[in-house]
Image 1 (tube, one colour):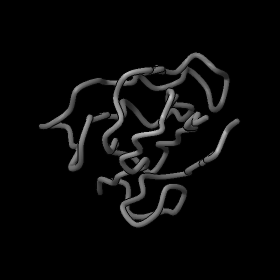
Image 2 (spheres, rainbow, N blue to C red):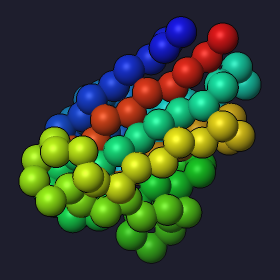
Image 3 (cartoon, rainbow, N blue to C red):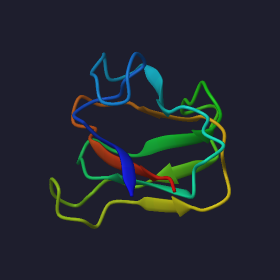
Image 4 (cartoon, rainbow, N blue to C red):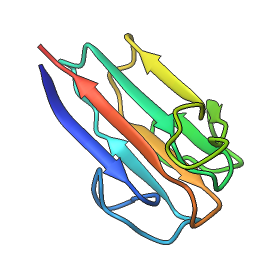
Length: 107
């Protein structure tokens, strides 16, 4: 069962699928001890997205870099599936053309 699905045109720091200025950072998934896995993919053309296991992702503090898609929403942008991490996950980017899709799977 997919319990949360979010789609964001830019980076959010106030809600999983809200919008805010593109150089800001935000937590897109809160901690969830019931999480089976999560998925996130960069579907924008605005450059890399910086993903952090925890809060406060930025281009200076991150765990993974998700490359930009070659064209908007074509499916070849960087992505990650994680079946272990249960804590919060944040993301950051440096362009108004950043866009990502994410979901979380729970029992």
